[in-house]
Amino acid sequence: MADAVLLTPREILTGFSSVNNQNVLINDDEYLRLDPAMRLFYEKVRENLGVACIAGHLRGCGYSVRALNLHGRNPSDEAITDLIRRERPKFVGISIMYDLHIVDAVRLLRCVRKADPSVFVAIGGAFCTYNAKLIAERIPEADCVAFGEGELTVEGLMECLAAGRDWHAVPGLWFWQDGRVRSSGPPKLPDLNKEPWPARDLLVHHREAGIPTPVASTYTSRGCHAKCTFCYVPRAPGVVAGNAWRVRSPVDVVDEIEFLQRDFGTRFLWFNDDNFGGAFQDGYNHAVGFAEEILRRDLKISFHCEFRVDTGLIDREALQTLRRAGMASALLGMETGSPAMAKRFRKGTMVEYNFDAARMFQREGIELEPGWIMVEPGTTIDDLWENLKFIVAADIAVSENPFSFISRAIALRGTEMYDKITDPGPPDLPDVEGPAREVLNEARREYRIADDRVEDVWAAWSKVSAEVSDRKEGLPFVAQSIVDATRMRRARGEQSLRPRLSRLRGWVEDLPHLLVAFLNVGLLLADENPPGLGDRLETELRALVDAYDRDHLGHTYPEFVEETERLCGERVMAG
Image 1 (cartoon, rainbow, N blue to C red):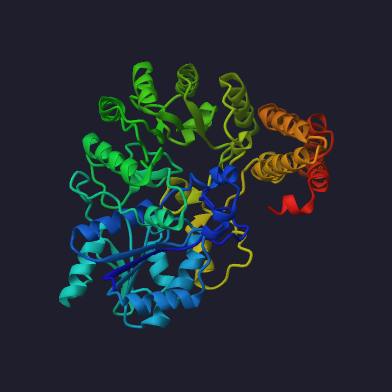
Image 2 (image 1 turned 120 degrees about the horizontal axis):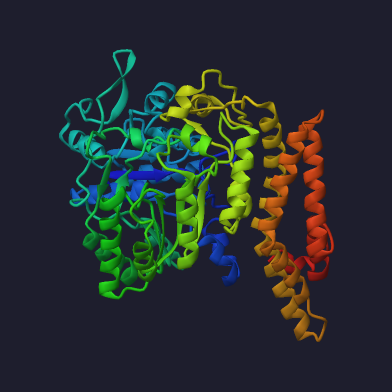
């Protein structure tokens, strides 16, 4: 039996554009049936670090905890009710990390209530940070909704439940009381240097299931000093002057990395910091101190992190030290090549900083993943031209998927951008009903861009670029089928299909050039502003993509895949 059960819901794909880009489309059993070469595409999925931190904290307080991440799995209602009846917990926590987790979270809540109507259920997670009151209002089946950092909040709840005391004064909660929704006030923030390491239940589960665990997640800091209008981190509950960015000891972080390598064979780390580089000299000292500790112990690790261009890490010596310590890639918060957009975002930086940072990353051989927003409520055609010119001049369209540059700011509750949208449109929520729909209706604000040409260009760009991105995501499976069929043909003395792999490689390698042509076609047509701009542009973009496919593959992409299926045979394509 467990004192607490912590659940991470599945993300239910609905067609609604989600803030999450870590979708898992196969479960554990399906993973184990994959060819080993294909497994690489599923091994960099991140753990739910919030649940891991709370589980580690509660265990440090002496409680027994069962933490279950359902992301990528599909347990039945009966399996969930059986789990609760078997564990008989005092407390169940359901973590809504991303917006679309809420659909499955409602199902899990009802399963828990069916299993034990008296068990205490709290909903929490990143999505609740600025939607806690709304969720408490719309989902009264939960006893409370926690917001902000949850370690001390959940500890307080557990202490009250164990002692039979009233829990309503525990900081960091919204709940129903006396016929209305009330709050106990902002949460208390933990001292990161006193926190135990995140629990590794997901890695343990994978190891026991025979799934390799070369990838893990952790953090070196929390918070961010900046005030970007599209981000809610600067308004985090409990944050006061002087503690917007807090850090862990580099020695403690590296001790944890040694543990992960020893127990799980970790070779790659996601750092979940909001701003790994912090601010200026403090950020430099923290990140470089961490890197030097890695080097001092001669650990072999690769890692990915995220930081801003005004951090102290945009420095040749700092980047060289981080690269030697294992920084293989980083998401850098550039956002735009337009000075006007940067000003509206309140970035506090200049486009020239973005350019210098891009050049520095290229010189040091570090993979740059630009944080980028192509379109936001105030975007003009001139802004889009500035963005395109920057992408070309800085040569940054070389990310894993160049078409990720075609992105639109999401106005999330808790951000300044959300507050400024006074006439929001209804969100497109196919197949979502009940309280989940009611929450999603208000959790963000849809907007129409003032310049109709930008809205038309965006509609065409997003629709056609999504098709290109889908092809890019499916390409590894096509390539694997060609490899499998070639091996079978070789054994029979038949002609190899390897030339098809070369065509696919060329298709992928030239995607940055397709992106630039794609953007240019859209903006040139927008400058002309012909009648039916959106429809005409969509037609021209599809023609451009078809011509690109034929140049590289000899066919359109769908025709190439169809021919590959025929040549490889249905049995190989089915895996």
